[in-house]
Length: 116
Length: 116
Image 1: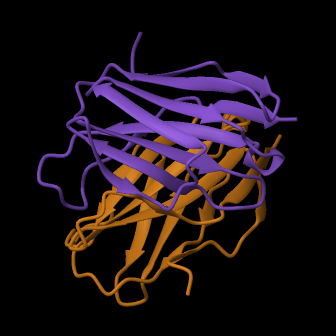
Image 2 (image 1 turned 180 degrees about the horizontal axis):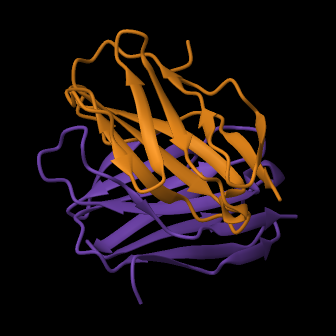
């Protein structure tokens, strides 16, 4: 079974509107971290926002926020007031804490296109 | 230089060539990673180094040989590659404090490798 699932291969949004990118995960660990990265066409993977499994509040970072629903094992990224520069691939990733592994497991990504 | 840098940014090589990818992190981190991003596949971990010691090898073929001379530098030596090895190779670093799930990985811009 896939550990990270992103069901939206592509999304379109109008400039200045909000958009939600979906991510569900699968783990039996109690301690884990969830990350979102942005990858523009240049290739660099840019860290956006982090949510810990024990965090009770949804993470926010500027225009980025997470809708973290632990019971549903989902962590959706909300981008408010979309800008043209937000057009990129967005990846959800998880790191499981109790296994001792340091690797991130990535989803297949969502390509976001912001239209003027 | 700031963050994580990688050279070269683009590399084209024949199957009989030997080349090396270089990664340098300027963040004072103690862990470094190599990831491979192929077309139509999620990002996958290749190697992890912590305090210069290799701690994970994700069943990578021996034609890929990593080297970590110190906590700031990481190399990936390539020899007798196959066309299917063409991909974006991303380096990342993190500060492994607790060894848990919260340590964020920061990525370099990647090296786009083409094997002819």
